Image (cartoon, rainbow, N blue to C red; front, side):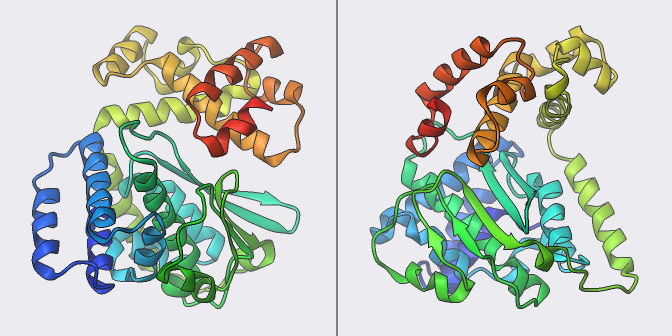
Length: 336
């Protein structure tokens, strides 16, 4: 499957930011990386850093390259999306298998009155990565998601709006994006998200049987199963915790029971991956807290309950701790 490293390089070649020899050199470096999600993430960051430095560009380059990416650059994921029955189905498929492209992102659709929001969240960012590099990568990803209806499904559907949490880039070629995407882009927002008309996303586009869909999903499932086991375990722990939060039953024993292992075995396997149950629970709660705070539809007491805290004071302490390490665009939400 084509990785996002290769997709970025192909787009940079198409846009004239790299020549073929430079692309081959960078792809050789990427190809020599071991099958390790952490090191591959650093490789992606290094490529973005080199592209930005080479052209004296800022994070707006992420949008520009995404406008030059071809649908053929995304391998099985691109093919699978092209066989979806609706746009909402396509976004759900991407969310389900997004770890094939990047192990640390979360893409999910949420229904609101008359609209559907597609949220893109970077779950873990290497603190050593420059903010401009992170922003370029996030703009690349969200712009690709905004292009999906027309480029992969051939639908004349555009987002109502694209919100991004980074500041406005300097003027440049990226500014054509609003015309290409058919929607306004708002910078300096609280999250990375696309907002669509709900009826457009839910409308079925194809009603005939599509046998290739079943083959491609099975292929994607098998490829996902090849993601290193410990990362998969951490993701399964996070998924169990997310479902259990409102009940408050979020002990390691509760989750171990869901996964069919003992508490001691779960603790040991997480430790082997330099992870811990407590850290995963904290990340899940933090991510969900930020999402609930952004909606503005819940009181602090309600959010504390939905996160499984026994007392609101514990939630308040957690918010204070999270705010210390949060990026500026998120810090205000956490502090409220």
